[in-house]
Length: 306
Image 1 (cartoon, rainbow, N blue to C red):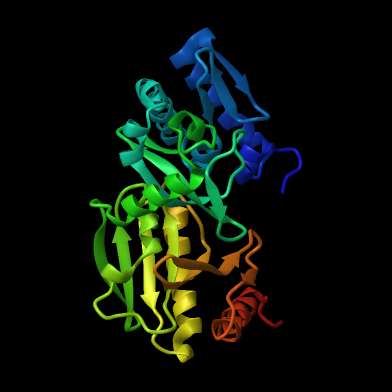
Image 2 (cartoon, rainbow, N blue to C red):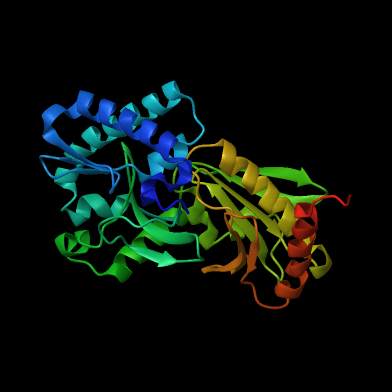
C-alpha cells in the first residue's frame, strides 16, 4: 500500500498517475455540475448540492492503465448515470418500487462512507444487496430499510430469490483440458446465480460440489468437482481464467476462488493477495489438495537457477 495515496487511489500505485486522474475527475465533474458540487480528493467523492454523492472508488479502479480518452468517457457516463438516478431516488422511499428491483450479487470489498447491506465472504469479497435499475446497479444502504419499513432479513430474502430468477443470464460451456467449465454471462447481477447452481449443470453435483470464480460483475465460471485428484489442476485453471478476465474487462469483482457446497452454501476457498501469495481457507478434503496449487505458484515465482 502506498501511504501517500487515499483508499480510492490505491489501484493506481503511483501518486502522479492518481493525481492526473483526479484532475480529470475535477474537469469532468465541474463541466457537468459546475458550482453545485464539492470535490474531496481524500474521500474520492463529489457531493452535489441536492444531496447526491458520487464515489469514484469503482470507476477509478476500472480506469487504471486505460488511455485518457477512455477514462474521460467512463467518467462522463458515470456522472450521467447519477443524473438519471435522481428521478429514481425520489421513488426510492417506496418499498413497492424497490422490492422487485432488489438483487443479490458479489462485490469487491470497499468501504463506502455509509453502511451498505453486505455479508463478508472472504478477505476481498462481499455479498451485497443491490438495486437493479434502468440506469445501473447500486448497493442498498442500510438506512433505506427504515424508509421501506422492512428488516434486513426481508431484503436479503427478496434479493436472493430474484437473483436466482435472473432472465438475463446465458450459459456457455468451455472445454479446458477435458474439464466441464460452465460460464454464466449476463448483467451486473450475474454472480447472484452462485446461490444455487443446480440448474446450470447437465448432471447433478456430487458431494464435493463445485469450484466457482466471479472475476467480473457480468461473468461467473464454475467447474464441478468429480474427484479429489483433479482439484489442484481445476483450481489453477479457474484462477488463471478468472485473472485474465478480471484484468481485461470492466466491473471487476475478485480473483478469489469459492467452494460451492450446494444451494445457499458458497464458502471461501482460495484468495490471492496483491503480492501473488495464496491464502487457503477451504477445509478438508480440499485443503490438502489445494496446497499443491500454492506449491506450483511458488515454484513459478522462483527465479531460474544461475
